[in-house]
Length: 325
Image 1 (cartoon, helix red, strand yellow):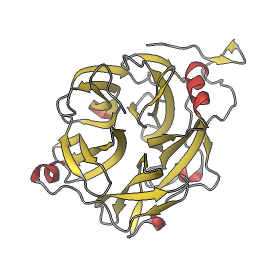
Image 2 (cartoon, rainbow, N blue to C red):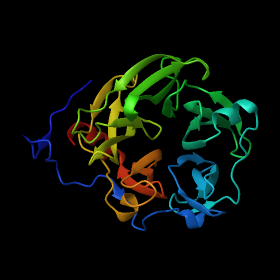
Image 3 (cartoon, rainbow, N blue to C red):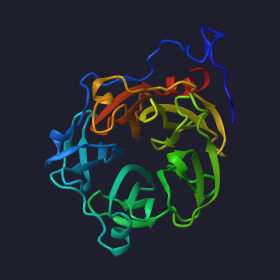
Image 4 (cartoon, rainbow, N blue to C red):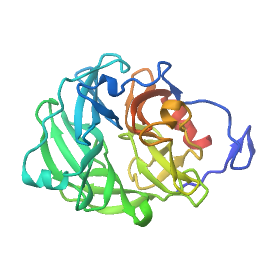
């Protein structure tokens, strides 16, 4: 693991000093989707997966109704900012196994396209704990269950967009006692049986902005310098208040269990009112990002577990931040 020194204006500095440069810029018109945009009364829109589909932006929104039922609802956009939400949620599998392990809630979908097939990893809560489930679709109209691809307790499953050394690869976050957790990687020959697990990144010591727990966020981007992963880190204030930030790191292209470089400071932290105040205060949490041909990256993130937001950055800036932020 590559441990980088903090630098400020070319000189070594303390942990609190970083260049005052906004590499991630929030969309000027604030949240792009709220509870008012949903087709039924709900408490909010949570962290949602995003992918390119037929030349458009497709967001799979995770929505909770006021009776605390959970749904995935598609939304489509031409420009990545203005989304039209479907009139009804997707139809989920009806088999007994799916219902058994999703009886409490489903959340945090991440969408990965591989060879024209879209795989949706999500967290599934039940009385048996939380597991990573996976749905499969080609058209976002019919969804088939791929089953549950982890043991309890595990979440934040993110599938790489191509095989690595002949195997599918997945980032995840096993849950340790007291809600701690680190980022791990596992491999599979068939997306069913997983193994060769290794810890990629361990949370920081107490006092770091990611000391409580960390987790994979967006599907990794392949760059010349490594797999760019936008992840989340959590610290706790006053003994009980969780604060979620976004970070960036580069993973080795051939062995993504190895970190090439990592930004020491967050790239986005809760600052605006819609990120600080909501169902869960002080949260910015990404489940998807889109790389544009002009080098821009649209980072979609949930604000305070209440609204859906978007911010933009240059890919080159995100990569460079891993070395010098």
